[in-house]
Image 1 (cartoon, rainbow, N blue to C red):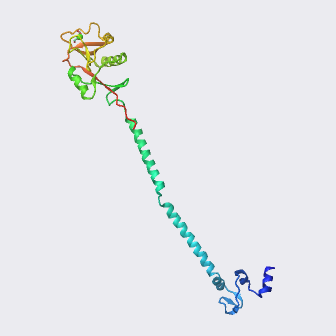
Image 2 (cartoon, protein in one colour; image 1 turned 90 degrees about the vertical axis):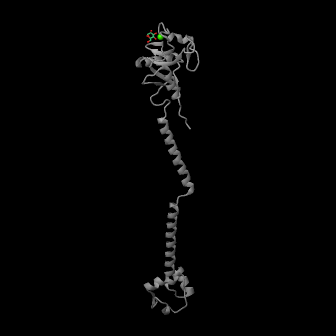
Image 3 (cartoon, protein in one colour; image 1 turned 45 degrees about the horizontal axis):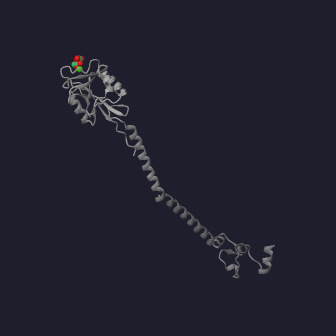
Length: 237
Ligand code: MAN
Ligand code: CA
């Protein structure tokens, strides 16, 4: 219907003209690509060349756009990298802390932990004064007994090792016993002397763990010794 209407108003129009919407008054025989009113392949190509070129151009633009987008997505963004680096560092710090916590001990190697303190039981023997110095050299004291539990723990260890010096003497005044920190021996601890001790037999001014209790002996004798020091807790920074 539409075609018929146009043919009537505009005169005979080639089918291609109707499709392309073009209509020229130039003689048909002069148009290149048109032989005896029939459009050849070259003619088709020529008439659609600009459309093909436009499509090619569009395609090229699309390819270029995709290529640019692909490149841009590969470039690391500052906003993405900084937090990921920070997270990496945080993770490393957490791992190091966990490793440190595993290594962390309340007492040094070769020391024994008991009720919040560290104890060093010597393997060699020294006189009482050298034992006091040995403990001071490692930031400790020749042991001062503060509780019944501690006494039991120390006595048991000394019994298995042999006679062991403690930080107790009456060097300043015969018969008045003091610990190495200057504090007096409490009456409640007198129960730990072995039966008949302290007897000051041949001038005995230094205290030791011997068998099941305490004894006074000559300070010049070489014996094992026990050092005591506070624990060194690992700081959780
Ligand atoms: C015995 C007792 C003790 C004394 C020691 C000294 O065991 O006489 O009182 O201290 O010998 O070796
Ligand atoms: Ca004695």
